[in-house]
Image (cartoon, rainbow, N blue to C red; front, side):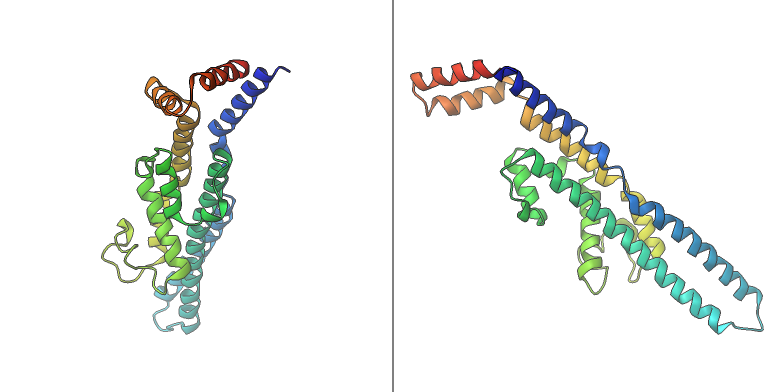
Length: 234
């Protein structure tokens, strides 16, 4: 295989991987089991509440206690859906960035501020990526569940589903999750498109800037050497 063919093949394989990356993101395996469990617990909860309502003479202390713990369990499962969803997104985001930009240090990707700053350095505006606001809400809620004593804090109180609420029910979490469920995939699809443009698209303006930068640092002999090397690899 010639050197030029080798470079062309490497470029095509890398670009194809970037363009089809999102296909691996669609598999959120936790949701299937969690949704079934929620459905089963809600059915049990409804049955107990119906039994209490129909039994006026017997207050049913044990049934009330069972309802209390069922609601707690439903709340915990709803929290786990949110935690898993963000972890699932974060894992694929790190992979996408590291595979696309080898110079990036994976150890720094845990800080969202670094991710945004890095994208800006590549002329990618994070706020213009599809579902940026939804992923901001998901990230803030994920952090509140993991670290805060109260889920409703300064960063989560303005989430649409939580506004004007001092205490949340599991149904509030599920309503929020329903809104952002596909946002991780949408964000990563949009980001991979922007990365593709950064790595593989070179319009006249961009070529002019690259050539101007090199010409300002190279003499004519070095420029001719570079042209020869590029010609040999195309």
